[in-house]
Length: 305
Image 1 (cartoon, rainbow, N blue to C red):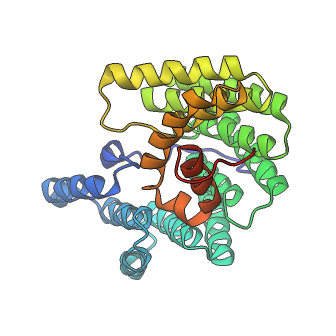
Image 2: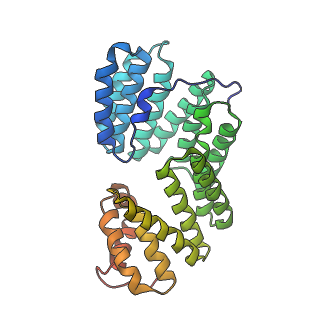
Image 3: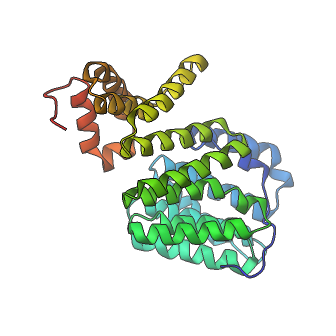
């Protein structure tokens, strides 16, 4: 990928992101904008606008996202190179989330090229990983692009690029999982967990542990998988979390079902459906999965497998 690396600018507003709560993040961005407007360069001001666009994309408000990006694009100059790259990335993400695969791929490819020209490995890695995650990418393409992004992240001296390693290991793990190469996938999930533990981000650590448990179930190691998910459940309860994780409840149900403890599994599926049915992505892309969870939770005839 890039021949020469350079440190890409790191903005303070990045720390305000909560990708699970884009509306709240939007409000924080507005406060930041009011407080720092006078001190922001044109590049930083337009960068922040691209992140406003992303908050809309995450809420599937694609027209609003594109209107903001149109306005950003109209102001781009040679003095706003970071905003240029980020505008391409967010335009691509908006198209990808809306299912316009061709336009998404075009914008991610343009973002990758623009980032490489500047030597900004972090944005280059982001763009490559998004190419891997376009809706049209085959499992083989996803694997290829995620490996390419991981190679760049590992070779880069830029900490922004290196912070991508855990996510990329996770993505490679899921691409291998799709190929049913469960042992290889498990190795990448375990590597992702080690990297997450180095970073110390509790939420990401939980996701990494969940992924290991999910892979163990596919390897037929249901008891080990169940132990991991029981630990995650206990941690949620101890923290009195306001974000109970339906995916954890789903996995506990699946593990108990694999162990032929169906009566114990039923309330977990019921709780999983209560939470996951609110997930718009699952409702759009995996309605059969939601229907199965509902049935296993007692809403209708129980499926045979």
